[in-house]
Each structure stands twice: as C-alpha cells, then as structure tokens.
Amino acid sequence: GRRSVLARVSICNSKGVLVYDSHVAVGERVTDFRTHVSGIRPEHIKGAPKFEEVQQKVADMLKDRILVGHTLKSDMTALLLSHPKHATRDLALYAPLCRGGKAPREKDLGKVGVRRGGRPKGLRVLAAEVLGMEIQSGEHSSLEDARASMYIYQRYRKEWEKTIATSSHRKPKK
Image 1 (spheres, rainbow, N blue to C red):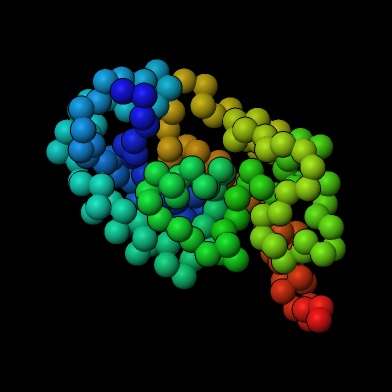
Image 2 (cartoon, rainbow, N blue to C red):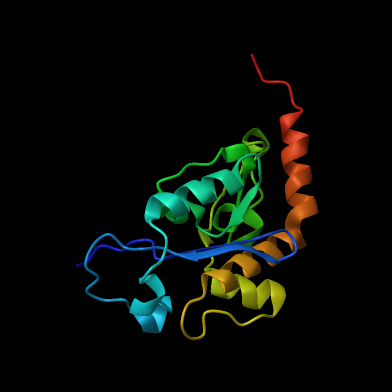
C-alpha cells in the first residue's frame, strides 16, 4: 500500500500540556508502519479507538477554539475535518516564518495565514531557529510536534493576533 492513514492524534493546550493523545485503529491491513519515521508500531494501534471516535473527540475539542499547528491542511485532511480560517494559525502559512517571506500586503491583512513569497520552513527547522530545540531527530512524535508548534506560536502570538485584530476592524471597500 502506498496510502497513508491517520495513526495518532496529539493535542496540547496553550501551555504545551497534553490534553488528548490517542492512537487510531486502522481499518485496513498496514503494509509498512514506517516506524523509523512515524514512531508507530503494530501494538500501538491494536485495541485503539476507531477513527470515527477519535475524529468526533477531536472535532468536539476544537469547537470554538483557535487551532495552532504546522501544515494543518494535511492534518485536517487526515481527520476528514475542517476548521474556520479565522480560528486557524498555521505556522507554514505565516509569512514571518517562511523562507524569503514578506509581510502580507495591506489588502491581504485579515486573510488569516496569508503567505507572501517564500516557501514554508519545516517544523524541524522552525523549532531549531525559533526555539533552539531539536525535534524529529529520530522516530516521529506527534506530541513533540504539537508542543513545538504551540511554543513557536506563543513567540509570535502578540504580533500575529495584532495583525488579525487590526485587519478585522477595517471597513470593507465598496
């Protein structure tokens, strides 16, 4: 099989404290766990909750919350969920964290996550540059990624939220 499936979900709060961590039962035969990268082993998914149960729990937890992460589109696609753009803070789309990224044009302020120029930096690179923290050096840990994303967001939170607040109070052009 060449298709990737969701095997684990980790959510931390704004302080980096774990609030939800679950492996996910896979509804099909797994041909390669890619443990060296994923950190997932067969015993992790044996007896794990079904996808629909984890999906509902995550949806309930995210309701009316700001979602912070890195390349969230892939995470939300794997969960078959969506989240309001105004309540999403994706590090991969935030211009100050992108390679060669420029500040968003004034007309783009308010479009949450607008990236102008540049390419996203990987979370591993951002963690090293912003936090001086080494992550993803061995087996993957979704909790480690969640915490690193939150800590990076916290470093930029005031500037990021100020940009959003400023842009949301502008009157639309007619």
